[in-house]
Amino acid sequence: MTDEILRLQHLQKSYGDHQVLRDISFGIKQGEITTIIGPSGGGKSTTLRCINLLEQPTGGEIEVHGENILAAGYNLNAYRAKVGMVFQQFDLFENKNVLQNCMIGQELVLKRSKAEAKQIAMHNLEEVGMAPFINATPQQLSGGQQQRVAIARAISMNPEVLLFDEPTSALDPEMVGEVLAVMKKLAETGLTMVIVTHEIGFAKSISDRILFIADGVIAEQGTPAEILDHPQNEKTQKFLHNFRQNAF
Image (cartoon, rainbow, N blue to C red; front, side, top):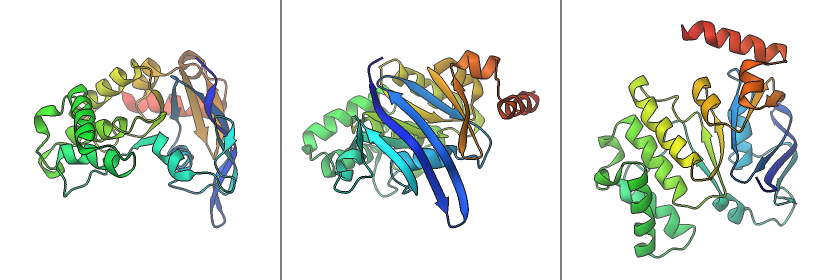
């Protein structure tokens, strides 16, 4: 592990009088897999959406290589190009085929040539098992296939950090495994990943560190063994107890 490439400092987010994030502070090291778990409405997805600035924080700092990106004058477009995101609902362009979906961001944002963008897209579609479907539109694909295309699109942008917001929550159960397998393969490449998930078994197998977020704060963080096998916080204990009861 090298030094942190990204750090949240006392991050806050409110919608009017409703404070979703109260005080979120943690760092992300290069090559680290950080998984975020916790109850619905606790602030997990909002944390991710603040990291990539889909939501504007109402307090705190987001530092990249030691610089606060929320400070006046920071090049936010350059930052956004380095932080990829895979969404719950895939968010593919419905009017473009698989290959075009994986090329358009490279051409528009990274200014790659069409030939270079195609070469990179094809490589990444091959990696996620979607190369045979390059001419298909999203409507012609299953949910699992769409999510694998979304992952290929995200890694084609060569992000420093790739965020996953509950990437399997919109999938039928039989499709969950194929997406998790792709994510495990990605993790083995050394890609830095932050994953919000309700797949506790997956979190245990892939994570370097797990954060438990509830009520807008990090209630507990540590290794998978520390958080999942020996949780210290009462909220974590209750959450995992309920999860295990519902799993059987």
